[in-house]
Image (tube, rainbow, N blue to C red; front, side, top):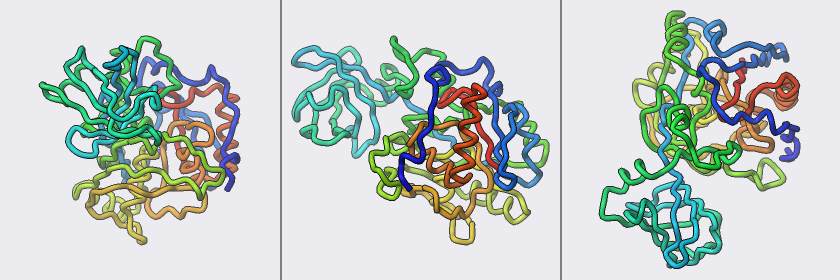
Length: 345
């Protein structure tokens, strides 16, 4: 399919700039694939759409403060670095601005000079390689001086706030390693989770560290020409058993987010069985993909022409999902990371 088929008009004012006062206060659009309909609802009523024996699979990755602001040693000019992936000890791939002005060998200082880095490549690719050095613990310095890596469509002239540090994490965030939040999970509260558990449904925790691949722009004209970059994931024995038992009992696998969906479909056998595994999720899901495991999907609203919108379209049906998006725009739903959500059943 042409990537242009995943475009839609979105007024700027519908891009959520702040989280709602209450996590579970979001609106939720219920999209029914069998009936080809959608219904307006609210996330606090999620339990009404969950059945006994269902399993909700959540991503317990934790966002780390991957955005570093530094200065060039030679000029004192401002440099912004978004850590993407550690290649080996203290050598990272990163998005760097201004990227092409920093030649191989250029040095950048961070954290009041307690941390510094050398550019290891010539700037010919979008992702740069840096070697970090410090006399103190690297991870501790990043935690103290790094910022929450909010997406660029959330405007923070003074940088991420203390509210962002708390609200741009899910309730169940545990495993450090993501550079973006699995945003479908941001709506959950202990009360909502208790309501779901009381029905007889279960939760299973897996880990997929959201990386650059999740939000990398699609530059190809055809969906078959785009490959989502690999992201590290792990499904342990407890999660695999919980998922397989739910399916055996006639329950549905409800994926909380596109990242969870990618991990589950990467791990599933052709028979829809999950085994404990860890590795890199290399799967790119576009319309035409046959889902092996996921039966329902909770997801936020995604950017036009994005790989995430393609994944949701593959699960929901291209025409249905774009019609639902047009309704969401007309009904003033809030979009993207801090926005409202959609449950596809």
